[in-house]
Image 1 (spheres, rainbow, N blue to C red):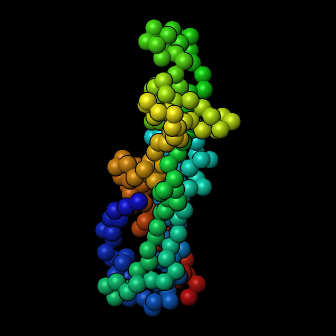
Image 2: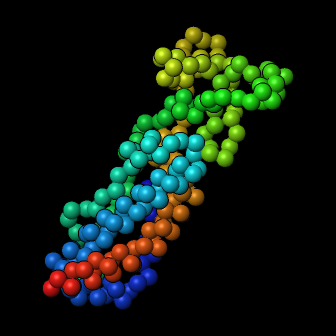
Image 3: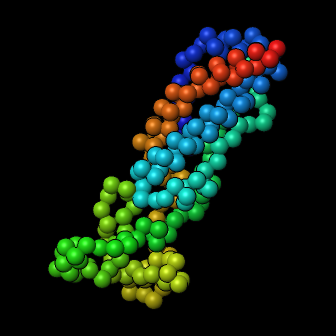
Length: 199
């Protein structure tokens, strides 16, 4: 995911650049790891707020880490902090979002509309359960939703969004960016004080 970092603390950056590279490394690497971990927590929170998915399903798909080798940038060391979603090629089957129960009133409405016996799913947390149509059905011992091609006997898994797509919505990246910008200067400053206090 792409995160915009607001480095508007020039004085702190200039102070770091005057220090030996060994000291810079001891400050920046742990500080950026803390920031990346904070960003990961914020991203998991925003995904589960936006989408109808449990935290336990999101956490294993997101990693936060800092590059081992720094680059020289403007006379100082530059590390890269990364928040990576590892499910970029694996779409989720819609079985995760299938409606588990239904009210009597909703059942009556769907009965009138002719969709009571169809599967319904809700992907967005604040959305509504929508019908998957009369060609969707559950198979694979209750683990997968499939759909039949119209006019054919062929069936396919009914796939939906993956974790990377959930992470990369504009709203989620903006909120994670804001959280990272909020803590970045403080984390670097704290690490700088910690390292200098030991010299």
